[in-house]
Length: 239
Ligand code: ZN
Image (tube, rainbow, N blue to C red; front, side):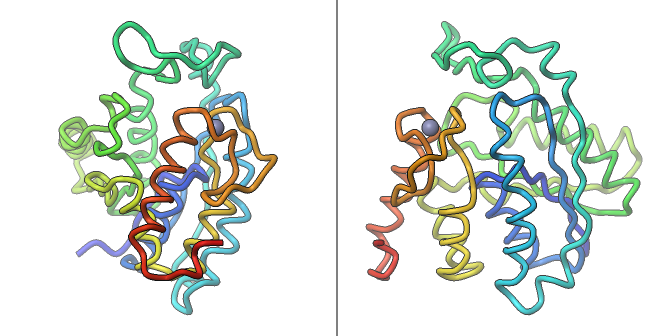
C-alpha cells in the first residue's frame, strides 16, 4: 500500500484537484513544479498561495503536506518554439495539435518527477493528465503513461506508480471531484485561485475563474464549470 505521493503541481485547475485528491489518500504528499520559461508566470506564481490555503480546508491535510520543489526546465524553451514558450500566437497546426504543444513535455516532467520521487523515498507520482477533454496531446494518454511507468520501473528498479485521477473525467466531473474532496470551499479556492488561461489574463473574475475567456483553455474551463453548476443542486455555487 502506497503511503506517499509526489504531485505534479502547476497551479492550474487540474493539478490543484490532484493535490486535494492526494491529500485525501496519502500520509505524506510533496509537490513539484516546473519552470520552463512560460511566457506567463502567473500559474507558477499562484502555487505558494494554493499550497498554503488548501491544507487549511481539512483537519488532516496540514500534517500530510510536505515539501514543495520547483525544477528549472528552461532548456525546454531552447528546444521548443511554441506558443507557450515564445511570442507566437496560439493556433491549430496542420497535424491537428495546437501549437502550444511542446513535444514530449509530460514525458520529461514525469521522468524528472520520478527521479525526485526516488530520491525522496516516494512511491507514487500523481498527475492531472486527461484523455477526456481531448486536446491531442499524445503524452497525456493513458497508454503513454502506462508505458512510461513500465520504463521507469525497469530503468530505476522501483515499483514507482503513476496515478492519473482525472484521466477519464471531463472538466465538469473534475469540478465535481473537487467538491467531493473538499466541499464548496475547495471549489471556491480552485475557481478563484488557480490559473488555466494560455494568455495569462487575470483581469476579471468570471463565474468560472480568471482568464481571457476566449483561448481554448478558458473555453474548456468555462464550459466545464457551467456544466458542473448546472448539474449541481447547490444554488449557492451560482455566484
Ligand atoms: Zn484564456
